[in-house]
Amino acid sequence: MYKEQKPEEVLERMKRNEAIVVLDVREPEEWESGHIPGAKHIPLGHIARALNEMDPKQETIVVCRSGNRSGQACSFLASMGYHVVNMPGGMSQWTGDIVYGK
Image: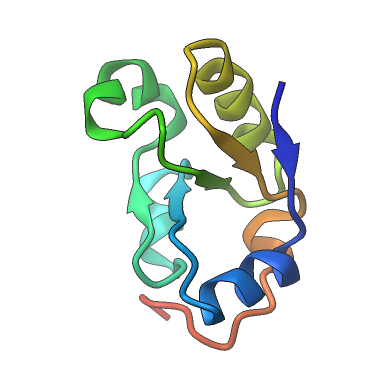
């Protein structure tokens, strides 16, 4: 099981410099169109092969375009013992004024 946090909650946590990692699971062309500063990019289809690139103990906020793929990633990662949080609404509801790649 995993928690969820709305985009505005994630933004507030980032502004407070909390120790979180943002993992973007969108496809490369989506990533290039704009992403959250400092986010790690691993497309959903590559997650299983990239487990060694993530710290299971580190709280990781998982994002995609709308929240569906990030939910899938969270289900998988949580089943593997990772501390993950889904961001429902994804980048389509991201309220942050800072987005790289745009």
